[in-house]
Amino acid sequence: MAKVYAGDIAGKAVVTIEGTVMGDVDNMIFDVNTGILVDLVIKPDAELNRQKYRVEGKFILVPFSSVCAVRDYIVVDDNRAIKK
Amino acid sequence: MHADITSMLGLDVYTQKGIFVGRVDDAVIDPEQGIVSGLALGNINKELFDHKGKGVVIPYRLVTAIGDIILMRHLTRNGQANREDE
Image 1 (cartoon, rainbow over the protein chains, first blue to last red):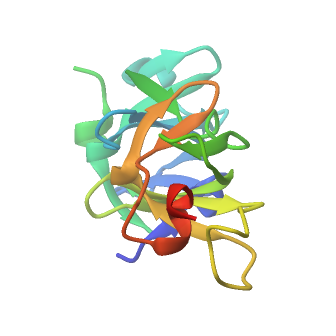
Image 2: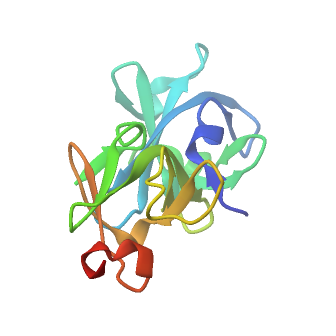
């Protein structure tokens, strides 16, 4: 995967491996010291079951480690995305 | 400390010696490694950079602090960046 601009990722649709639409990327949270991306902030789809994920206000947080692919869509592994 | 990508946008970038570098336009992401690999700067200090393009990308490892402004390491290898010698 090539490097991408954060501005290009913002607004992209997030789908799970199973093909469920989760919502659109709103923001990303990173560690200031290391630059490691911690979470993906997603504006959830109206039909999404938010209870499975970490909810912050009207957004849901998904660990960046669950992201499988970043291209036309952001593909997320649902098993790693749900809160423990 | 954790921060939002969008909270960095528009911040001014200075070196640790107080030289203005540019303003953050965007962040460069390496999705494979899951890191912020660089910052794309616009409105760059023309005295530092000898090229005509609109902006530059600085590696994120040079960034030392993010607050109301962003501080990065002062590179002395680049002759133009080392203003003290002039």
